[in-house]
Image 1 (cartoon, rainbow, N blue to C red):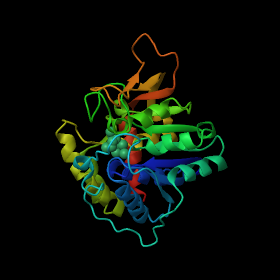
Image 2 (image 1 turned 45 degrees about the vertical axis):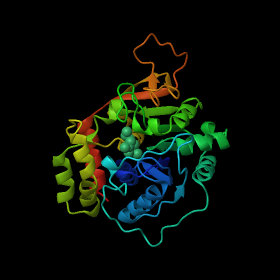
Image 3 (image 1 turned 120 degrees about the horizontal axis):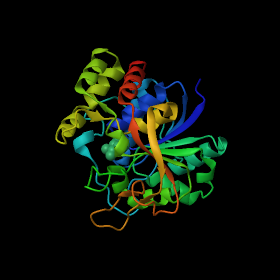
Length: 310
Ligand code: BDR
Ligand code: CA
């Protein structure tokens, strides 16, 4: 059943945590490894939180540390959405057997891709610092991967600035390098991830199941839910579950191939994913499948079922 090899690079993060649970639960996906990067929270928190999710799920997926800071910018973490500890201030125990691998994220990713040539689906749900570092250190890596499916960017408006989405804004240089790398990219930007939200009713349903994963999901998403209300959103967006869901259920999504360039020098547009969808196609290439729509009801139904299966 588990026939699709996947590597996740994440900055765990409440919605990254839900995405990890989804990746574990989906029967099609074979999660080979996880690397962590700073972004939503510090690298240390992302590392520990990923192990805490391992503990919650009763798994021991290997976790590798990556970058402690973006390539050029200073890190600006996102406490309002993710809480002080990155897990919505929920205290989960750190498993006693959590291994702190000496091997770095980029080296472990390259080794895994080399053992699955043309097959490994790389998923990124945080800033692209680790992946840009991996592509620089191992120029053969983009050609070894099946694809990179990522949460980041927006063809339309941003969320951290009027123009830019958080992951790309956090490390625009890394995002620009990755979009120039030639790896086949599926971009799950805000255009589609804003449609993939859990409502308070969904969260109640998950918690009332009494399962650890269901109870944790509602609890950890409380700060995110409050912060989402400030933006008049109906629920809390499961941004990072979109690339995971796409790998197992591409039929839920619609998108268009387009040229995407990441702005690295603009003042008001820093980190913007400039997407050639509606202009007169001025970019002479199409380097990404840009997802634009998702069947929200089916997405949420599979997500809830997956969480409740843990
Ligand atoms: C992205 O930023 C983070 O807050 C989320 O985890 C997601 O990866 C959404 O812009
Ligand atoms: Ca994330």
